[in-house]
Length: 232
Image (cartoon, rainbow, N blue to C red; front, side):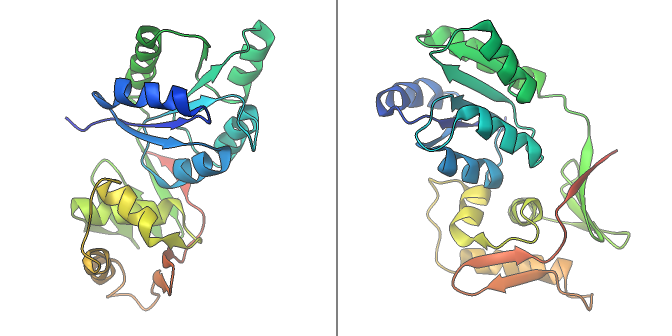
């Protein structure tokens, strides 16, 4: 079974240190101490759930939820907050949060809420991502370009998915590595370049328009439009 991946965005180090071991036995857990760092990871990592503190030092959690939803990120979001007012909870649910836990809380309750949200999101509407003349199919792990289906190996697909979700923007090498291999993996310097060459051979070699660009000193970019969702 593929391990679910959670992102905890929380500036309270003591709380993060308590949550990490409690959750990492079951899930792959990433952490961020600020809204800025959390948003960046939410945009680049394949997450199954975001646990978000409401009061962050650089940006209010409500604005983080709004931003993620406006940019098309539909990952379930579980809010942590010391505020217990009903109006506050309603406001957060209205802007796109999925659930709300009031501090202090028990780990048993938090784990139960996590299980419910993951279960609810485990049967999503099937959809592909479309950008220009490319279509990415998560269900078949393939790319469709100008009507031709191009099957990809697991790491190739992960790299392409990361580029696809960030189409038109340069993606740093370290983010691509973390997306495809995970933070704990150490790679030889040229490993990602070998995989990217294979990906280019499949995606670009037979076409005049080359879509996968090298951004020297930084990483790679998919030279295409921001992707849209197509239900299938």
